[in-house]
Image 1 (spheres, helix red, strand yellow):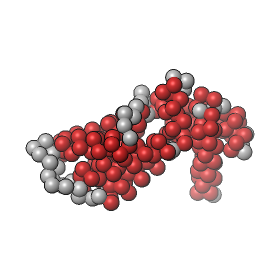
Image 2 (cartoon, helix red, strand yellow):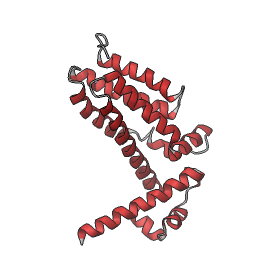
Image 3 (tube, helix red, strand yellow):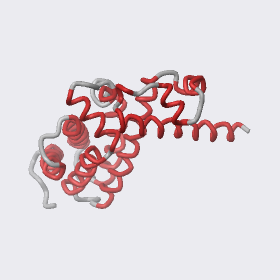
Image 4 (cartoon, helix red, strand yellow):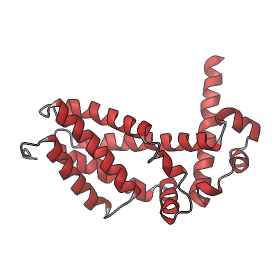
Length: 201
């Protein structure tokens, strides 16, 4: 029975997040209302409040879910270039930046924030970044330990932090096409990892 309740709760959360995702993508975070989420998800407002407590909690859960999806995609890109640091970094960053362009939720939030009309949800990627950075860096560091055995621990840690922070910066404020930014970020990351000179790729 306990496992059944947990499954039902998990399905309910996904149902709510799917509804919130669609509403934010269509109208922006600033226009999102708990009543609209409950109606779209087919549940009562009380059930929604019991599960999440607030709109801000839903925002945090939305960002966390998108982050997890990003990280799974990044992991696939990295594995496809295992052993080639710069190529792996470039593939992972380009995937992430392209997703930021194509993902309806992220695109809606970023465009609204750049217009100055809606920056609340973006705060989960900027002023509330520690969970985002921590999760991303933990995954990348675990990968780097195995995939880049010739990089010393300090350089590896700096390279992982560099790629994560630069990538998030380019998501928030893009300055070039994803492939161009990815090439530059990968180059910087490789130089940080190999301060004595880049190995043959």
